[in-house]
Image (cartoon, rainbow, N blue to C red; front, top):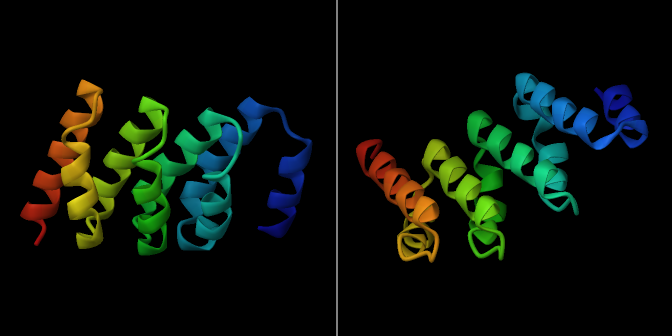
Length: 122
């Protein structure tokens, strides 16, 4: 996998996003790289990484995703709420409850759905 990661530096943004999606197929071994991708300057890279982390379900991603619920960009808040709902970690309950009052209706709806998912899975 190291060779795959080293090649990312030479890729264009769309290629990087596809590589992030492909990394999701590797599961747990890709989590450290995906956590780094959450800090990328490109919002599309952060969105792809958050989405894939939600699919993988690794609990190491819960705190970084919770932090992203406070992002200024509504798309970032939306994907973070969605990913947290898929992961199902109880640490996300209070932050998702706060996100239910978000200024953006899609973030509010997604946060409510994530909370519902968390309560069902308990």
